[in-house]
Image (cartoon, rainbow, N blue to C red; front, side, top):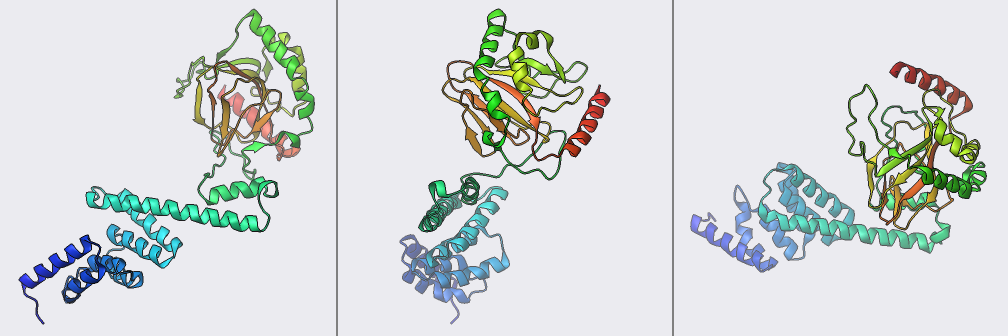
Length: 382
């Protein structure tokens, strides 16, 4: 039967009212005659099927919409809802995320879709929480929890469930391939660590002796003579200070002479010996309230070591997706080519002895070659 314009208008109004009160059967009854039109109300029909508790039929209708427009935001949202009703949370998440991604790239998304987009975010979060809970429960059934779960499995699980993100080495000037992406290194893995840690009190006493005579700290980030000023928010900021013992491969005479036990303790560590570059060792001071913004170091051939000497409460260091706190006398060893940042939320200065060591995975042969390369680079830069 040919519908008149008045009949079409009346059926559309009946369908809208039924959808507004979430009456799926009534909406479908009004929409059925309209489905034979050249431009059938497919989205309204899909919504009516969802209200009527028939998500599979809604899914089939929505396929027709997406066949014509694969990035139709409204259809993607309804597909997510349909698959959620079916119980396929992975498909629901995929369609909801496609809708959110499309909306993010679309200027002037209709205001009427904002509520549905927010519900999509909440649905994705709910699916993810249930997924994580069930996965962790499955592991617990097999006895994999607490001490029985390795740190690598725990981190992989956190990454899988979105609790953590992946960070990789991104050195600013030199990348050495094939090295493991370890954020922190455990101090127990290095046989030279106990001897150096045993000197913590002596090293702290030498630091206090230097400070009693004069405060020789200078800003950690300084411009180089004959070079443009560094585009660094920390440039010249004394709240992050450095008092050097070794700099550019040479001992800083006055400081080194006043800290002989510290200089001797550093001999135990596998510090690079590179003319013009290393050894590099200093007392690093962070003033109260100071935040060192996220950044990466210049090389991935080294590890940075912190021997904590003065550590008030509220100090922490993030490397990649892990945050640790300094403990007096216990080395923190990390890869500074991975994004990292630090805070002193305490009320007193935080001071560590900072120095660099070779990456343990680099062979003696490669260390020798790297030394030649870095010395040439330093001489060329000069």
